[in-house]
Image (cartoon, rainbow, N blue to C red; front, side, top):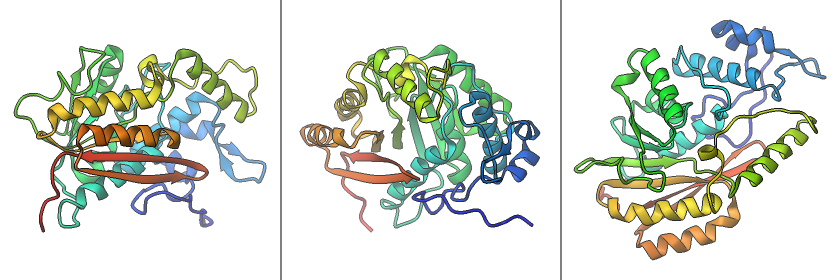
Length: 303
């Protein structure tokens, strides 16, 4: 009999990953994972989370076990996202949409995922959990091909997930949202770092935190995934400025914000842009704190 697994603190109540990983069940779904499972110093099964292949295989198992995604892979060097944290954004976004829908999460929502990446993670989770239809945009051709391969390899996904190439690296919504299209929400995990050097230093800190000082370890992530000029605050400010053009086509624009100190600048930009509603939602996974912001140029729907 399995012992009860302690809960992970801070995750959304509907998050399927609120308990510690059940490696026996996950390995039954994805036998390759068993080769990476090893005992912790306390004798509990765990993974070497410093091993990128182990982490990718864990993601394959999680997506298969919880979300019905039988085929998932990403090219070497691309970002391998933490599934529990990504699921949290989806569930909190669902709560935001419910606030405009008499408290009920809409099951036919249309969502635009900005920078869907090679992993296509938000559409995979959102379509399974809520039946949402997604458009995923991506500027990187290789990432777009990888995401397309995931959609094509899993029956039924092509009915709920479509992908579009962003041909203008300076644009976010322009060229992606077509005339007369409407979306219930957009979501985005913006580039975190302000330069390639900062991204490299962040990767080095991650290695040191894992006790791998000096190890040549690649945690994955392309330029567009990890950094842009000015970092996340400048990216989000550009997103806010461009969102004004699409104010009548999107009910809620949202974005993750990794650094709390960026919020005052972002809030000023929203005020200057004329957003009529702004929300901030705190998220947590263990000791890691994050948040997402949402803004709308539309008045709240009346009950």
